[in-house]
Image (cartoon, rainbow, N blue to C red):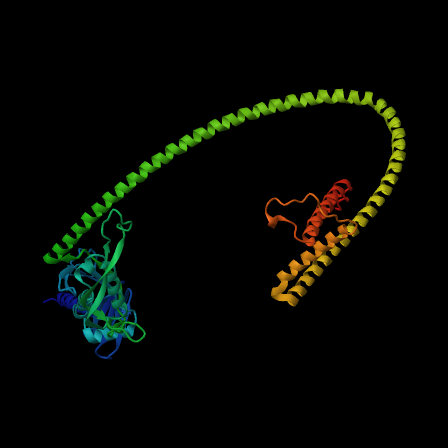
Length: 489
């Protein structure tokens, strides 16, 4: 064999060996991955991030690659790299209804080298990390959270709350739970009624159900289990839920509720339509009334404008007449000025004369007034004296009457009769002192002896009566002839 050929073969073998050794002594890193490096000879462990080229002795080290961001999807079509697909997660709700929930979780590995070393020690490779931790944890969180809801509660408004609970547990730790009977509030529409204004509003109803509920401490904070993601520094950066698929019985229940709600909404809409039609009719009436009012106001304004024009024209005419009148007045004033001066002089003379007469009249009136006031004071004094005298006489009479009453008591009537007889005697006997008594010659007996005047006392009594009558007649005549005293005011 020629020497040159031997050299060529040796060179080829050397080149192949060099390439082989280079392949296993050089490794490169890419962006978006974390690389766990382990040297068997020096027992060195390192984590590399980002693109680069590294050299080492062949067959004496090991490189394990981890995707920095990773997504697992359960029943949702999702495009992209580092993706693991699984079927929808089957869950059982608190009321034993089941459903399948499509979901997507995206996780991010830590950049902390110590955390990555711990992940590699426990899981050894990226696939084991996904299968034994991330996929299992995602499924467990969804299943455990679903037990905190009833089927209709989840499908009728609890979907967003369910998603928020998932994010909270993946970030801070799964809740510690216990199963117990709790009272839940359900929002339903109020009964439909034509008379009920709140028939379109929601109202709350309370129902007792068995549920898995989080355990809380004394401060009301939810107790959590150990957060494995936090221990490894793994972060859940994205959670998405697809449309849940209920089982047939739950779907029938939800469809029946939807039908009932739909019927109620139709009834409410019909009621609201009737109300709106009534409001529309009322608005039309109000519009017509407003238009009529506006037309009336317009007519009124036009009439007012017309009257204002007439007033302005009348005012202009009046101003013109006033100017003419002022001219005439000024001329009359000039003519009357001289007459006024003459009349004023005459008037001054008359005033002087009038003042003299007035002063004399006032002096006389003052004298008369002083005399009248003096007479008035005298009459007033007489009047007061007469009042006082009458009052004194009245008080004296009352006092005497009281004395007589106290002195004689029950004999007052006999004394009064005796007093009257005494007064009669005082009146009769003075009139009889100058009377000469002759026995009557014309007294005859008319046939009855009992009619004769038996004694002188009977005769005297008769004449006394005649005298009394004459005296009374004389007093009456004098009363009419004498002038009456003036009445004091």
